Image 1 (cartoon, chains in turn green, red):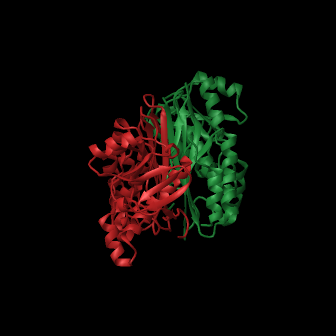
Image 2 (cartoon, chains in turn green, cyan; image 1 turned 180 degrees about the vertical axis):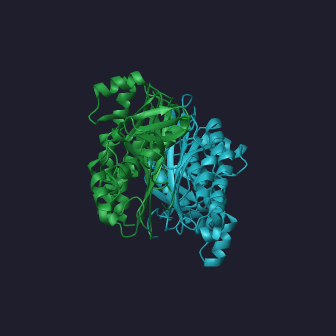
Image 3 (cartoon, one colour; image 1 turned 135 degrees about the vertical axis):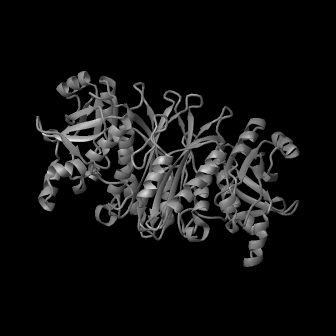
Length: 307
Length: 307
């Protein structure tokens, strides 16, 4: 790696007593006295799998690498505090490349009020790998878990689904502020963020909660990109919305009274939509309005698998 | 990746309310109420750079990936609590490979009383990458920083140096118990773990503390492996001890009274050795006993660089 890169990183993320940050050997000290229940999550993104850096550029990679971790914290209703960044840089990466990657992360970090408090920067003859660990803390409202949904809870989602590969998987907004506000103002039983597909992640939430879930297909908010993609590949926009993944919107289990109020008030900048109900039993069921109920096979991106 | 690997990981590291662990989207909750100053560190190891998995096997890779992070916590005198593991697996990796890698980490985790509380498992057509983030907490004695050394402090090291490439870089023992005991029983001003080379890391500690350091070359504890390597490549064993790196022993800045008692009592299973003194000024100075003092150019592994 260019000495320029090393010195730029050292200048930008210097050693300090509060946050001991270095290249290689390093550890950050985070004072969690006021909120001692830490929430920690990590995601690794690889060139050729999660992005193609030659096409999208290092800026979008840097933003995405941090954003997916912030989304994981949002899924737990945790307030982000800090992040660590580990890089395996290809030898072709020059200072501009590294700057672009880091500045995108810095911008997002600033937007979410967190610090980049360390990391490990390496170089090799292989494609780019970015591994980010984000640390947050549980708020006074407690954590939001996957396992808290109960039969009768309303399935509420933020935003729209499908077609994220056309750009949203880079540009999405981690729903941190949104979930913290909802958690303060409404009773929430469970939640997660949709990384692998609406139907697949909903099935996971239902399974973790020991219940089933019924979706009204007429209610699923479909992103314009899902329609565009459907027009290209012949699959329905709804199918894209149910299975594409990387929407990074929230699925919430909300008790009925709370849901009614939430849906009426629409307190967020992003729409909240009821798409169904958690029920006794297991698995997913689909229907359209008052039409017949049939099983819905969850589809999505099976993380780490070939398909 | 084989479905077998996914199901093995899910069975071994299941979702739970206390530690929410999954593959992909996941966050762990750590209750730090009793010790709310968290210490967080991360290291990424790559096939062909930090190990050659075809030669050493996944077991040694798994152990090393966690051990280097534990060593970083030891450098801060932090007590380890938990770790997250992110993997980019080559497609050739089968279940036995993954089991071997994880079981080595589990064994070390158990030895140090920590949990593996999450991670992110991925698969690609490139070599193995293992990124571990370790979380610890500051003890009642406070953190040990690089910046606390003062002129007059004695330079004390644990263990022996040099030749770690012959095996020690896999088999080393993170000095966690050792540093916590020393921190309780003696006054320590500063410390770090030697990852990049005794002289290079000592220079970093001195620089962070705004002082210089004098080493008596006759006092440097030289590992047998440094002599073996010296016999092979013609470099002196001392040179190997000063510059090889990945010793993962501790350099400590200890005030004179404390150092006298510590060196006399030898309270650890591993030897403690005085190798010199921190002094006013900057940079490293070398001498042999009462001989002349000359500048010592720090040498070692420049992290992320070509040489």
